[in-house]
Length: 269
Image (cartoon, rainbow, N blue to C red):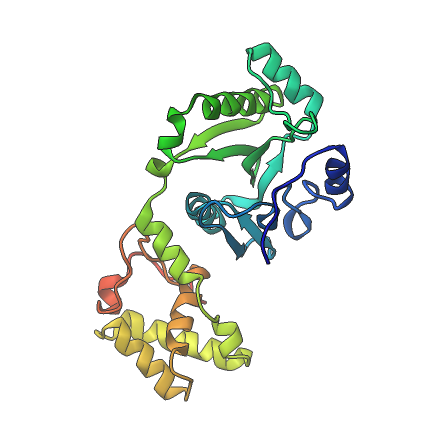
């Protein structure tokens, strides 16, 4: 279905509030801006988060990459994307103090609700992050809006930073994306006992047998009579659950042996 040009006015604003946008936490949070709201200007993504259990709306590949890093991080407890600067009066005040023109809809004259790409909850604090390609920073209007955002969060005592592609390690993002792709071992091996036995067998071969990872995957599938492709899902599960520790800054290579690929103490019990 074709996406229509977005109409922004007080009625639309109140509808967003009634829908609960920009409200809630974890699985109950609804982003203020959602993918279906705009004609696509590039690659957008809906991705289910491991931490929140809900679908996240990411508006660029750069946002997607940063999201994967946040979702993988052990210090992140909640991720809220497209988070509104919902005190519009204060946001306008911030802009006026900075001598910056606040964004209004040209047709209706109603003020837009600005958003931060991410509001992140860590163990002991909340931080806000804007994610932009470095090339965008050459545009004066982009820099002005970022300054409004920075000052808005500064008033609230929330750390705000700008993230560009220079701060996002590509290899690590690709590895995490691969680990989160495809059917999970939980879907492919429904029986909990069998899944645990497969995991234990995998760990044993991984640590003690001088076999390429690809061969270990085949051994697990053969010995447990599993559908082809299930072995790699077991491998992904063990990494995602941090029972096998890899250096994700290096490309995962299934031709290496378990001993060569092992970078830290496994946590399997």
